[in-house]
Image 1 (cartoon, rainbow, N blue to C red):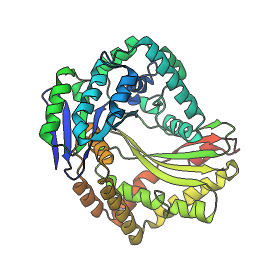
Image 2: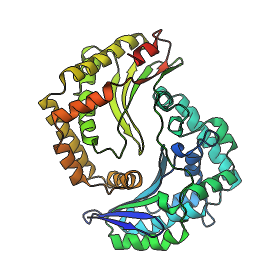
Image 3: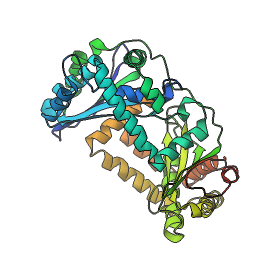
Image 4: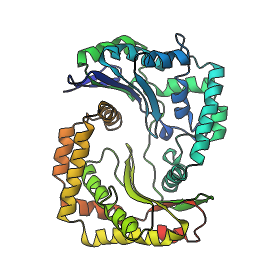
Amino acid sequence: MINLINYPNGLRLVVQNNPFVRSVAASIWVKTGSAMETPSNNGISHFVEHVLFKGTDKMSAFEIANAFERRGASVNAFTSKETTCFYYKSIDEDAEACFEILSDLFFNSVFDENELNSERNVILEEINMEDDSPEDICYDLLAKCMYGDHPFGMTVLGSSENVKRIAKADVKEYISAQYTAPSIVIAIVGNIDAEKADNMVRKYFLPYVKSEKPKAIATAPTVNVKSDSIIKDFKQTNLMLGYPSLSLKDENFASQAVLNLTLGGCMGSRLFQNIREKKGLAYSVYSSPTRASVCGTFNIVLNINAKNTARALDGVYEEIDSLLRSGITEGELQTAKAQLKSGLIFGQENLQTVMLALGKALLLSDEVYDIDKKVIEIDQVSVESVNEMAKSIFTQSPALAYVGVDSGIDLDKYSRR
């Protein structure tokens, strides 16, 4: 059973009780990320996520880590373009103690200068690590190709220059502006009932959170697709196509999900079978929609040898053209539906998966994640609805991002076909 509690200041709590387990997964979600930043502070959301773990007025960074670990609990956090999430998983009897610790670091971090500088170096190494990952670079380049100077076109990590100059005052100002009750969702799943979770929130969280609306929110970008490349001596080349597509709030997600699995979302998909298995043009090839609250993209990703770039792109467009011309088959529809439903149901067996789904859906879509509703929506997908979805996406020109050694092809030719 799922319970939603709305507090007067805008804070929301969603709880799913599962009495058949002996653990609890809990998370604090904040609707802030790189999509709410500016070029001058790009990277600060991710920076804040890191430094909140570096000590409070009660505990040092080591003591925070030890407080979770000596209970056998795990704790972590992540930042995306629209969200920052802090979460833990513990046995049920330690759920309240762990929530108290997580709330303490959320509200009472002291941001010691030495700790900030130490973590700054860690983040700079994370940026360096991503600079050695061609797929990560290509995803960032694709976002830039689609959204340009809009915040959705910026990276989550930000630039090294920005990270080097973020100061304690910047961190405190950003938290004050963005970490407010209307932009926060708490999601708790496991062997805990709504009354217990509510008491925890009222005791450790509710009295300390600001009621003001966040100062920065995500705005819909204007999509102006282009092509771009970064020529670098990587052993493998990454190539991505991005088509403007559905946002999180679009009700046609199930038709797009079926389209994705049919085209490139699994090993039996058309792209995988024809480009990798039959033609041997790519080590990996897949499609992957990304959906944000105000925009979305349908991505096609290839990991190839540079000399195969033109043939691989031709192969992708051949499959898209075939899909537009003939549509999907009834067999493909039923296979994709079965895969989608099994994925949803299998995910319900993992507390952390359920917790993340509940938190994200409520934060970005203002809806309580309902697996039964999702299954019904999948069952209602038809061959016709998938074919219409394919036409709405693939009759547009894609953005195209290329990272690797020079292939010698004209990307613009393939981007504006």
